[in-house]
Length: 596
Ligand code: C2O
Ligand code: CU
Image (cartoon, rainbow, N blue to C red; front, top):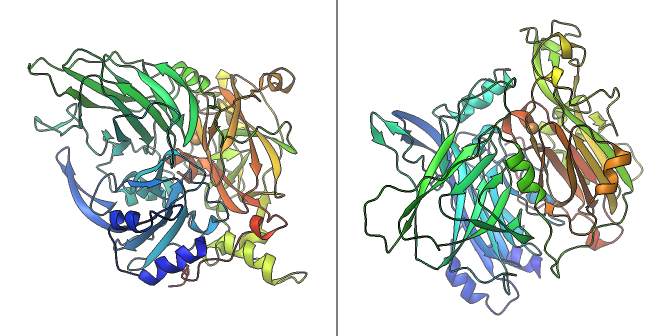
């Protein structure tokens, strides 16, 4: 059926039909066929008295929201009219047996070259809620992104909201994003965004020569219920979001339903999504919605505070009273995030998979900074010297793509290795350059020792690390536990760890060093939330469990752009299962080639 739909879509080629007509046409089938075209190009946008070239889809920032119903067949034609290589990743979409459409350059596909196009065929079965899409090409995702909304085929497990509103939190950079990416590659990490945005708007806390920036205005009617679909698309910060005079009832996160809980503040890390109901039950008037970027306190290095605001406006309000301001938490109060994420429980739901009782494999992954010597030298000065460059590591190894993956993406190499070379030893692309992610750090230490925060002699012995194509293979169906241990080496940032192609049960989180004897007993095996992005708290740890049952090569990485670009990443290779229904099908016929 699916193949038929795909063939059908391909035969329609460039003709772009109106999605509404298609919905009507296919109403008899189980799922409709939804088509979108993203024309990616560079446009000039002006903010804060400066003009910047930004790469966007269909001229919009954020890009178009893809809104579908669970079970639809979705085709997105990406036409690359920009000067950059582009891929689009469908963040949080499990892409079962569809790893080819995951959109990670050199991992799952060759990028779409300037002047070329490619159609992503997406399967949105078995997931409901808010996800998003973004370029997976370094910093371009700061402007090339949008919401991906999957509505239930039948009903919400909560009263139907009167209206649904995507709220995409992002950043405005005066700096050209391609330049930002280059700076990161060169080991220059001091850039920061110029503004926080809500649905692409900077809001009235920012101005150019006294002329305030446009802000988002949400018109609400008294007594009505609004479903806010929040996405954090920022490169850097976790955000704390409040609306003066209103409370949120959180009902979902990462396209999984959660047991509803009420809070006056939402904490959302980069890559995460949160679905929250807001009832317009305050006195008619205007209320600010504020998003403030969190950051670790000193002695961590500080960046200027980032904050944006939108206005919630009651239609019935006549007066000109100034909008009411919410009282925001301190941006350094990381317990806001710890408590928010600690409140999440899965909602019992027919689609909710059971939590496997025990793992087949357990990894302990220490997340921390380190350094490598420039120009491939084996010894050099550390601790901030120009001879070395800071990298991010997992178990003391920092990810880099194998050279061969620029010609043959890892997924293709993996697939062809499997299917053509049974028994023979033909070239394995980058596969023979992979380095196995160790089960645990070679040299354990007191990871959260506060004395390690300021750069200097204290942590110098911890710095030397290496670059490698870090990977890990899993047998089809393996139940995998990972404890992510955060550390205090040179900084105490939290890390939103994101796994492609799978949801992870977030079993527990805690402060300080993970202690297996004490902490494994606290795992929630009853109703842990399912997440594609798990925030590993500052000076603490998070434990996850997932079932490696989606064959392919899946990227796993921190969703802070700087961290992933300097190596906090790995690829997980998941073997085929024994049946056709559990094995990766061949690549799409029109798959991009690397040499054109
Ligand atoms: Cu949203 Cu690999 O990322
Ligand atoms: Cu990180």
